[in-house]
Length: 381
Image 1 (cartoon, one colour):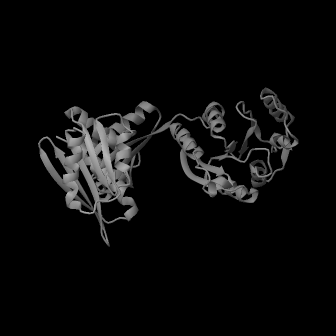
Image 2: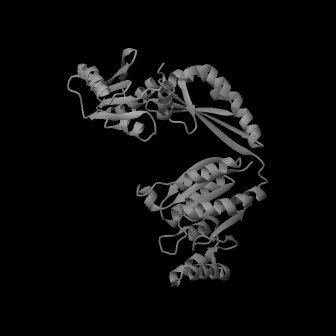
Image 3: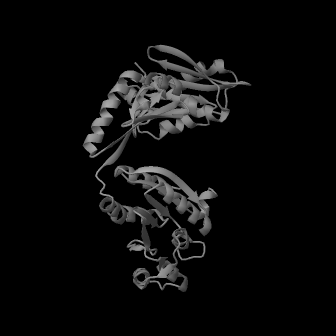
């Protein structure tokens, strides 16, 4: 089974001026067709460095996919860099120049002389027509491996990957398998506690199980490789059942489920509406709830609450003002070594108080507090 790596090219990526979304799209496309992705690298617009990255990739992987650097300007060096990496010159391809000119005519424009650079590709490369842009792409086959150079414009890259590159890879490498993943989301529990219960599953080869910790939330990822989606789903389902048995109510959802969705659904079931008072969270809890259609009536957002003992009083007053069945108050008490999150939950049945210590960086506390507040809401009974 072939493996792959991705090289995203562009100094603007290294400078943080743009977010590299191409690597994510390519990674998912490769995964869906059973190709293991071993590495993703970002390189600036320097032909020598790009060539070195390609050469290193060829020593490790079967498939190298580059994105970016195929434009007409001097700082678009991918064609020259790939040629340098494999020790051949670039060559002018009249057929590619015809394609470039035809594309410009369709746009009602005349190509300039520097656009001719886009008709040069490494000697012996396989040209790939780009019907949605002006930059032709190419594939270099060498010793059973393939270097595939795609444009950096996401729309063009995605079109070519779907309509040209995936069919090429499926035929060349006789791809007959898929890699599927499912992510279970947990809240109210730490990574070490989860690991203690499922460590044996994390040692599996196929499916694999891995953890990803976030502030106030831990994700459990199940990844399976199989000859069909049906078989992959079956492998995942078996492990998921075991995980749900072991982790129980710590799991609040899967894949695209969000904690705020689950929390508000619990309120819908009860027929209760919610009013929130938050202090020190920078409005994060309110933003998360406002983004969802549901029984959220509004919030009072405070920069801080000088007297935390007033939290219950402020929450009850705001709950009554909004005529909500449910009032939730959250505040952060900041100490020298750790923070404490206090939560007040007022329901038609009474009041509950919660305290959650947090020893992480202070800037993470609002998100951590938000997750715990939503976790409390989802357990409404």
